[in-house]
Length: 107
Image 1 (cartoon, rainbow, N blue to C red):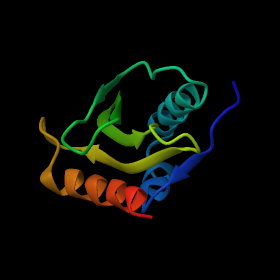
Image 2 (tube, rainbow, N blue to C red):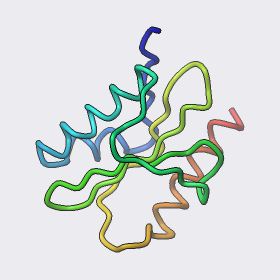
Image 3 (cartoon, rainbow, N blue to C red):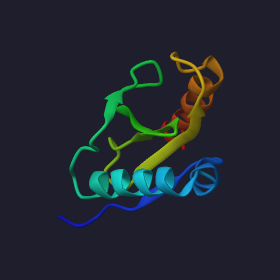
């Protein structure tokens, strides 16, 4: 199986690039696993954003999240990345991810 490309939407790549080194490394490793058809070691579905959306969970010092979708055969789409500051994902972060997912399904 060949690796599917990763398409970074909005500011997601800039956010991941700005993460502390170990957190950035953990996100990269998790995404390589996804590219190769495996699951990341720490993830969960995010149904509140849309069908097929998953969240990579990185807990190194702080909590970081990367929301992505693999249901499209051409690529893995990273919808949103952020530092999680409370137990519940903020409405703002959910709204951003939903809008980016909607842009994929309407293009």
